[in-house]
Length: 117
Length: 113
Figure 1 (cartoon, rainbow over the protein chains, first blue to last red):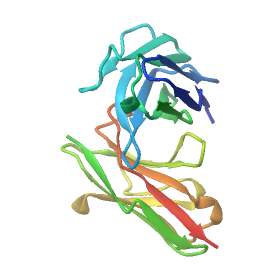
Figure 2 (cartoon, chains in turn blue, orange; figure 1 turned 45 degrees about the vertical axis):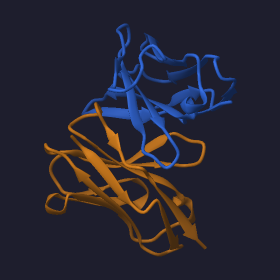
Figure 3 (cartoon, each protein chain N blue to C red; figure 1 turned 60 degrees about the vertical axis):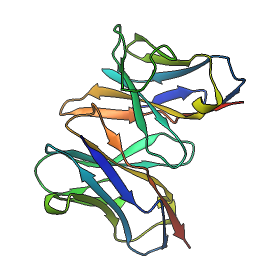
Figure 4 (cartoon, rainbow over the protein chains, first blue to last red; figure 1 turned 90 degrees about the vertical axis):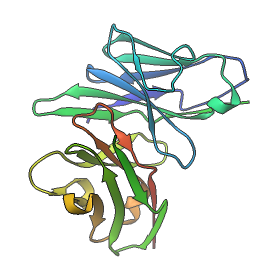
């Protein structure tokens, strides 16, 4: 099946620094990419939806200036957590959708565990 | 608005026993319903989905789920648990397609030998 590669899988950073997370669709061109955040014992929460070449659409309550999304190509989307703080520590996961022959399919990356000290 | 409730954050079953993971949803329009599985250090993998048509949906690895509109439920079952089924399972709902998918909090399945 299709593969979505997310990198890094785990990152630890100091408060105030910025962290970039990459999401790549390895063997297909994604129609749309999604970014989710999951806090411990909570569900995945959609942060933003991005399409190649256009600005991301952020969900209510998600700061667009803090969580910068760049969807540079049909196979790559990046999420940059700017000026990270301990409360940004979370599990971030991306997904990519592609229109198949019959319907739309969604594939997930393996996630990035961000710990901000 | 749509929401998903998964009853039980942890479920333990013996190998060979029935697996039942519960999911209830709320949606103001006919929903699309999904079950995903996440193995350690891996991404979410689609087990099965309901969009329209037959309410009993069969998925991969012997899992199936039944959409019951009157009960607003979409419980996941497997007749006989295998050790390899140990993972975290997420129920999800959307209005249609993969835009605005809402996930449940997940249920960790433990299979006891």
